Length: 156
Ligand SMILES: [Zn+2]
Image (cartoon, rainbow, N blue to C red; front, side):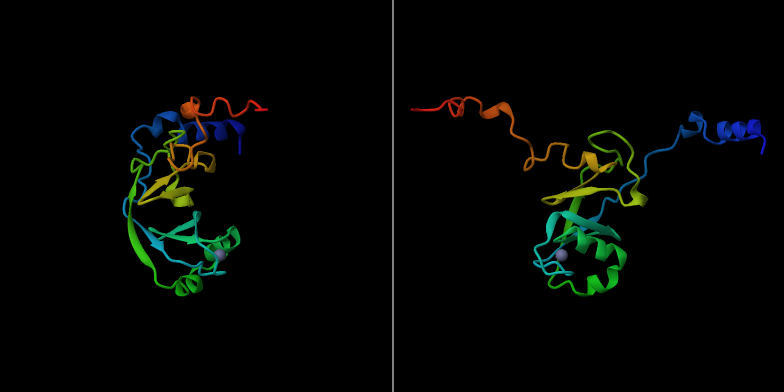
């Protein structure tokens, strides 16, 4: 193909103007957190941050390995889940925008997400996970500086 033709096609198909009017993809606003006591793959403790979203349901696992096993072949894993408790989650960012970076979330590409209590937050990138003010996960701030001021000084 002639290079000029290529250029014209690119310019025509992907001009910034054509973005106008597109809204971010909607993230699911009805998500169920499926809760159980043992990981259905290896029997460990399901962890909040190791989770997969499938058909608007969140499943938790004890390790990345178990998560991968589920993603590769969910059905046998789903069958092993015992005594699931289903909790409806509130989507924190139904606008489909990453709360940290503001970037649109690609919901069809298994975006990262985080379940906190009865809420779920979706992110555009893994870098953003939990950086939008997780009350359980904030790094120590200066709020207690008055109490601990003398801790560093060695008492003799
Ligand atoms: Zn596991």
